[in-house]
Image (cartoon, rainbow, N blue to C red):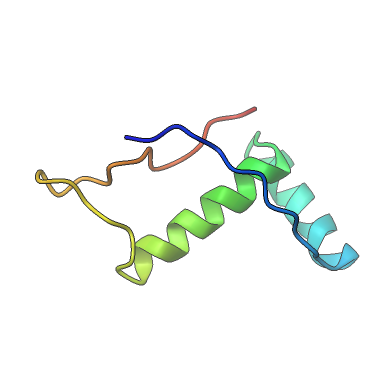
Amino acid sequence: MSTDKKAYPLRISVDVLDLVQRWAEDELRSVNAQIEYVLRDALKKSGRMPRDARGKPPIPDEPGPE
């Protein structure tokens, strides 16, 4: 399991960022953690999240509050 993080600049509209910020606050996450959570969920739903031999994702399902 890799815990390495890579910085990535993201251009996002002010309106979308405001909505993500409110959503993150509702779920006690940082905006960064919320974006990662949403991306992981989309990867799982699309079948693109790799799994280990036990059928579990090799990386944590959900980042915790930062």
